[in-house]
Each structure stands twice: as structure tokens, then as C-alpha cells.
Length: 78
Image (cartoon, rainbow, N blue to C red):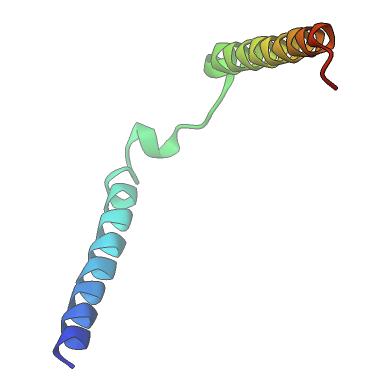
């Protein structure tokens, strides 16, 4: 019974803290420039960089798979 009461108090305190901390940044940014900021043309280079990196990583993985297949064929494994 004592453990359940302890758990209930900590759970309530945790949930109340999470709710308060989640809401406070929204209130703090409501009237500022950050609150009105949207994602626009200024960040196109970030998306382009991520796209290039994903293409390079996928190409690298495909290259590794092809090389591994060739090695397995040379060793006679299937």
C-alpha cells in the first residue's frame, strides 16, 4: 500500500512537471520572432546537403553489397 502511494505521488509530480515544461517554451515564444518563424528558402542548402549525403550513403552500401557478392562467388559460396 505504501509503495502504491509513493508511486502515485511521483507519477503525478512527473506528469505535472512534463506538462508545465512542455507548455512554457510555447508561452515564451508566443510574441517573439521565433514564434512567427517558418521554414523557408534560407534552409534549402540543408535539405540539399542531406539529400546528397543520403545518395552517397546508399551508393556506398550498394557498392559494398556488390563487392561482397563477388567475393562470395569467388569463394564458391551461394
